[in-house]
Length: 331
Image (cartoon, rainbow, N blue to C red; front, side, top):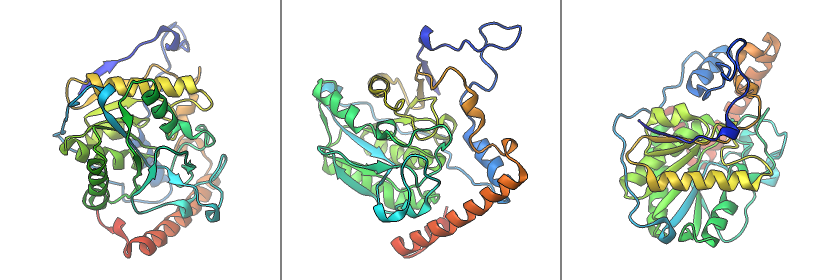
């Protein structure tokens, strides 16, 4: 793996360990989401740990033309707002009823109301009100207006977050590749939200690269995308769901996109990871909370188990209704 570290003195940690001034606390590093989610589901009583996709070889398609002449697509795991499907706004609980199981697309010349209440984002710390944190279409439009990229592709694409890797590879990824080819896309920016979202968009990025389309992920779950094996990653060390920038902070969102564009331009080889120098907050304590059974009581874990089981059944019923079968029985 090639890692290009981005540094900023203003963003360095000042929260040192006792007796070691200037050192960051040991937990102030990329959250190990694969390990964390495995422990979480075991604590909830699910005793068959998920097996993540993992490749040794990674396709790599260099940009064929300068970004200022390139058409750039945006790919998301966010869902269009569905008014009849319950709460999907700030403070919403996990809402499996708002999931979708077919690839969709949208016109990039107009605004869209996309939400992330349907996936397992960091509900305690991530913001669910500013879609610029997970769907950077406004930032991409600004980049096109400034001449940083040649054009925004006419459509963006929404990818379902199936746990079935086979379905993603055999059904969803080919549709997105075909759509990008039809739109004459030169490069694509992919922004996942939940842990499974990171796997889904990693698999799609690999297929796009194999088709000759350059990609970069703006990802908060560094361990997942690197484990799958992708060409280029901008690692945004922010809570799951807000990888594209801080809420209400256009400068942060523009800076995050610009870093991703630089990775597209300058990555020397596959498996290039660049870490954004932006920090979510002065304290890294937020990294300890997501899916951490050690921070919950037995009663709270039991409640979480009940909620997870209800969501699992709701999602399965929706998959069957949409696709005619439960594709998650396949890996």
